[in-house]
Structures are given as C-alpha cells and as structure tokens.
Amino acid sequence: MSTREKIVANLRVIRTVFVVFFKMLAVDLFIIFTVLIQPLLIALLAIYMNRERASEVAIYLIVGSGMTGLWSGLLFTSSFAIRGERWFGTLEMLVGAPTHLGVIMLGKTLAHVTLSLSSMIFGYIMAALVFRFPLVIIDPLGFLVSLLFTVVAFISFGLVIAPFFAISPAVEGWVNALEFPVYVVGGFLFPILILPQWATPLSYALAPYWAAQALHLTSSGAGSVYPNFPLWHDWVMLLLFSVLYLFLSRWLFAKVIRRAKVEATLGLQ
Amino acid sequence: MTGLLNWLRVFVRGAVLSYIALFRWFRPAQYTASKIVMPLNQILFFTLLGSYALGTNSAPFFAIGNSLQIAAVSGIYGVTMSVGGERWEGTLVYLFGTPASRMSIFLGRAFVHILDGMLGVILGLAWSGLLLGVDFSHTSLLALALTILITAASTSGLGLLMGAVSLAALETFFVNNTVYFLLLVFSGANVPLQNFPGWVQAFSYMLPLTRGIQAARQIVAGAGLSEVAPLLIGEAAVGAIYIGLGYLLFRTFETIAKRRGRLESF
Image (tube, rainbow over all chains, first blue to last red; front, side):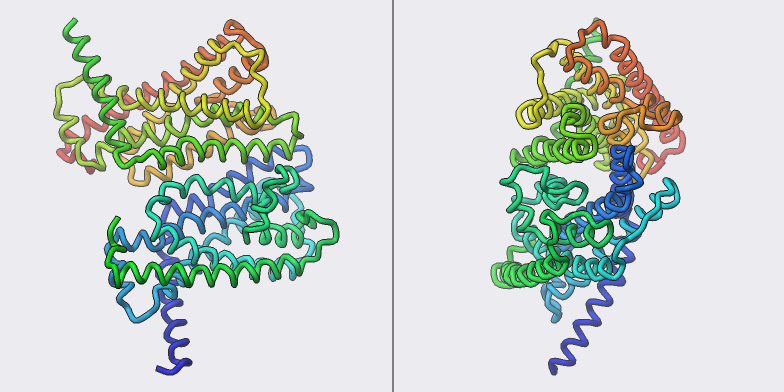
C-alpha cells in the first residue's frame, strides 16, 4: 500500500469512527450532562455570583464555562476511550485490526471534542436569550483561530489521556478528582493571578491554560496575565503542546499495543 | 420488644451490608480520590470563583457553603445507588419477598451514608479552616455537629426519594448529576439567596441543605443553638418530607411490581 493510499484509508477510518462515535455520544445522557448541562449550570452560577457586573463579564463567563465542558468531556470520554473497549470486549479486535489503534482513538477524540464545543454555543444562547446580555466577541477571527488551535491541542491531550488510563488501572479512580483542578489552574473562570505563585508553573504546563488565555483574550480582551502579551504566543504554546502531546501519545500507544500483542495482558482488569 | 429488636437488626445489618456491597470495588486510593480529594477540589474551585466575584473577604461564605454541600456526595449518589442497586444487582425480587419491615429496609439504606456524609462535611470544614482562612474560634462545636447531622440526614432524605425513583428510571446517573448540581446552584452554597428572583428563592427553600447551610454560617459567626433552632427544625422537616415521599414511592412501586409480576422492569 502506498503512502497516499495509507493516508486515505486512515482518513476513512477516522471519518467512520467519528460518525459512529458522535452518534453514540449525542444520545448518551452522561455525556449530555457533562458537556451541556453542567457547563450551563456553572455559567448560571457564575452569572449569579457576579450579579453586579454580570453584563460586563458575561462573555468571559460563557467562554470559561464552555472550557469547563470541553475539559470535563475530554477527561471523562478520553479516560474511558480504551477502557470502554476493554469493558465491551472489543479491545482485542481493535488492536488486531490493520489500522493503528491511535488512528481509531483519534476519530473518537475528534467526536467528543466536537460535541463538547456545543457547551460554549448553548452557554452563549442562554446568556443572550435568557439574561439578554449584550454578547460581543471583540476579535471574531482571532477567536475562531484560537478555537481551532484549542481543538487540535485538546485532541492531542485526549490521545495522551486514553492510553495513559488504559495502562494505569491504579489511577482509574482519580478521574473525578482531576476535573476541578484543571478548571482552577487553567484559569477558565478566574485569572490564575488569584492563585498562590507556586501554582503558576502548573498552569503553564497545561495546554488548557493557553487555550483559555487565547479564547478569553479574543472574546472579552481579558485573560492575559502579562500586559501586552501577544496572542500569537498563546497559539505557539498551543501548537508546541500539541506536538509534545502527540510524541507522548505515540510512546504510550506503543506501550498499550505491546501489552496487548506481546504480553497479552491489556484485556485484564 | 422482639418486633423492635428485629426491626433494628434488619436496619443495622441492611445499612452495613448495603454500604459494603456498594463500595465493594473501593480501595483506599479510590476512597481518597472520591471522598477526600474531589470534595476538596470542589470547595477550592467554588471558593476561588466566589472570591473572584465578591472579593477575598467572602471566602468563608463559599467555603462553609460548599463544605456543607459535600453531604450531597454521600446523600445523593451513595443513597440513590444503595436503593437503586437492588434493581441493578437483581436482588429486588428477594427484598420484596421478605417479611421484613419495609421502613427499616428503606431507612437502613441511608444510615451509613449519613455518617459518611458527616465525615465529608467535617473534612471540608477542616480544609476550609486550614487553607481558606475560615475562623472557628467563635463556633459552638456542639451546635455545628448537630447542624451537620441534620443536614446530612435531610440530604439523604432527597437521596432516598431519588433512590425510589431509580427503581423505575433508567438514567439514574443523569438525574443524580442534575440534582447534585441544582443543589450547588440553588441551595445557597454559592449564591446568596437574595440574588435570586422570588420564585427561585421559594424553590431553594424546598431543597435540603438550604437552611442547614444558613445555620452553619451563623454558627461559625458565633450564633448559638437557640438562634439557629428554627432553621434546623425547618431543615429536619424538609428531610422528613423527602423521606416520606421516597417511602411512599418505594411502597407504590412494590405494589405495582407485585401486581404486574414484573419486579425488576415495572
């Protein structure tokens, strides 16, 4: 098979997995809660907490609560992406298929990141229709580009989370505990300046922080810790993290496939 | 006398066994993650969010509110799964076939979760004191302990109602998650109730936790038991109403299930 044929075949697999998995997620009430209802309730909460200045900060809160949906969706679906196949008894077949397991997981991750984006859209609709806030994105083009970089970075992150949880059963129980810390150090709904200084490196080491920076900067003008910090720095950081995550993911998937094909222990709980 | 002893035996054994059965897969690391680290993270997030909105002086308001809210982790999720688990595990047939007191079976499903919920609240308050600057120097510990007990019990009352609902509903987790987050928004843990429109405030007072959180805040500020007694009586009454509704639903489902001969599908 030539390189071009391989690429076309992989793209076909990604599309098929995307379509099937998107349909499955769209009717899964746990996912609907995680990417839609929970972010809406967090947005509602944040609006009432900021009641005095809600109309001024509404777009900041909507983007921030949308980020919580994006992260929670990624965390729960990616951490279950491979483990779920193990539960359903389909993991061995996937690992044995000619398509690389990472390609299949890419289709799945793409599906839930796409679905998770809806949390921002519904938050926007709620704030505009229910609260009648004037919602203006100050740099629409910059926002769209930031969103694109965010999607790429989150997909890459998802491709690290999926194999990591598959080969580390001991950390399975920690999924719930990882949800809120990233809301905090990611600076989704408040600037990280209010955190102790020792927490700042944690923020810098995570792509969700740079995504929140870029999205806040282009939507409300808020978000940058340093004055005049250019937007393209956030984009470069997102790109760098995407590449880093992909390398890490490649190594982790090699471990997953080794455990499945050589040690034959992957299917064991 | 024998009847009472039997009632207590079913209550205690049912309480302990259902708790052990629910968490049979639990290991110390997972317990730490779910019951200690996750609640701490939640308290930190909402306290920081509130402090950013209303200033750092407001941190105790959010820290106390969210610490009390931790009672809902055990009260809603734990109790619902303990009641609903009978259906998922296929043991409902045997449960409805026993001559044991239904009230003792039903209430027993909440008992250990109330204690567990109290432990969660105490840990949350300890975190709040250590990390978020909540000052307990004027606090009547006895009054606070009673408040925690009543709040954990009333939240478990809502859990018992949700558990009875889960005997007939399929998407229990969806309903539980929604109820849990509705409590976060409307119980006053994170938003002063006066910020809500009147009809939302009326809804808030129909929920467990609302009065318990108010009482805890007053006690930490120095109020005595007599000052918060009306709030605690109200909190207990709300809990009792939910328990009553839950029990009524539980018995109704039992009757329907037996009449139709479809014990686990209704």
